[in-house]
Length: 104
Image 1 (cartoon, rainbow, N blue to C red):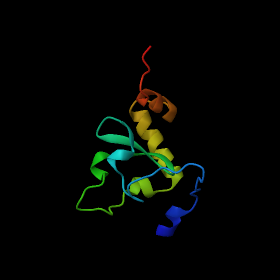
Image 2: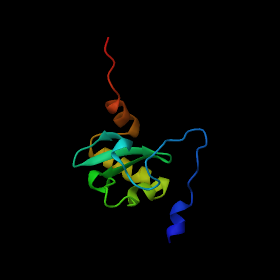
Image 3: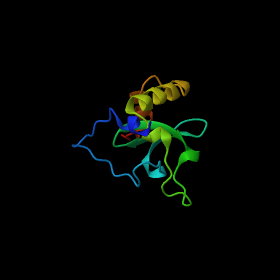
């Protein structure tokens, strides 16, 4: 049932990330790219992975990305598997590889 997908979500009041829509995935939300057209994105519920073909497109402004709207636990599990397939042990390893390198 659809209402079950909203159970277990905890709102963080201290940190709000401005996203272009409530449920769609957008290029402005991308943290980093993975192989096979996968990308890691971030919204108010945390990080998740989705493919670029699920990004928002003009003909469908209210298109839902099920990878974004699923339970946080499912998002974390799926992201962990995808990161392992791409050679990253943890999300922190991936984020470190995406961080801009400081020049001396």
